Figure 1 (cartoon, rainbow, N blue to C red):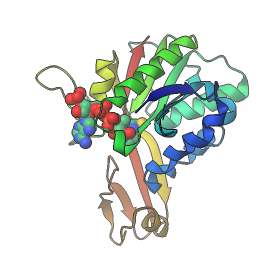
Figure 2: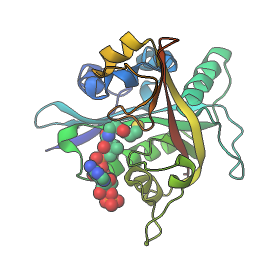
Figure 3: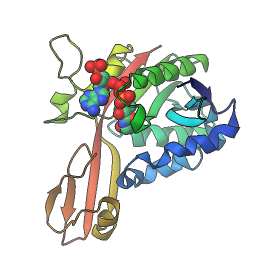
Figure 4: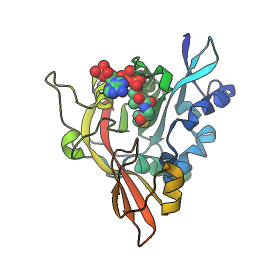
Length: 244
Ligand SMILES: CC(C)(COP(=O)(O)OP(=O)(O)OC[C@H]1O[C@@H](n2cnc3c(N)ncnc32)[C@H](O)[C@@H]1OP(=O)(O)O)[C@@H](O)C(=O)NCCC(=O)NCCS
């Protein structure tokens, strides 16, 4: 593999290659309405924050990393907003519309093609994002990190460490190794709601009983109400701060 990491602002012809990584999220993960504020406009408004790793020997997309700039009076002694990923997008779009000057960046996504996972690429992409944000003139990068190995209550899991002092969660470990500090849990970082028929389409599961449904790749159970014909997924993320 001949890997090259390119900023989309520098090579807009690569947007087509970027799209190759779009269908890697399970369908329910695309149902957060806040996400559409961002994904619909990222090419126009945030190309300097979009990084694509391309295999130059095949021309195929291998990984991507994207962030947004936003205005936030960040203090290392304070917690970051409960709204996590959704908050970061709303704040960034609000700043763009109101003309506010951004002061920090928030990571939004690092996606590795499944065939390239488990090879250490996630830390390469995180490093590239840190470098890019620094190059854009920012000193702070925050990240609503998905605790991909989560077990038990998220508040405890977020700070659980191995004997070597690094987080138990593999993805948090990548952030901490890169220099990040775990700040707090964003309990409602992404919210997806839908009628039960929609959830059946998104997941292929029956959604025929009240209560909690475990959905593959979800980090918390989906809450179902048969009487109201609605199911809700609230994804917790964990805020990490990188001082650059
Ligand atoms: C999360 C993700 C970016 C990690 O990237 P990756 O290339 O698979 O991970 P890496 O090879 O860099 O390994 C990172 C750590 O995870 C561990 N790891 C990798 N695959 C793992 C698995 N299947 N189970 C448990 N741990 C795993 C590695 O051992 C490593 O830990 P270490 O510190 O002990 O070495 C990747 O799995 C992915 O794209 N997932 C889907 C999208 C996503 O959830 N992105 C994150 C939020 S935006």
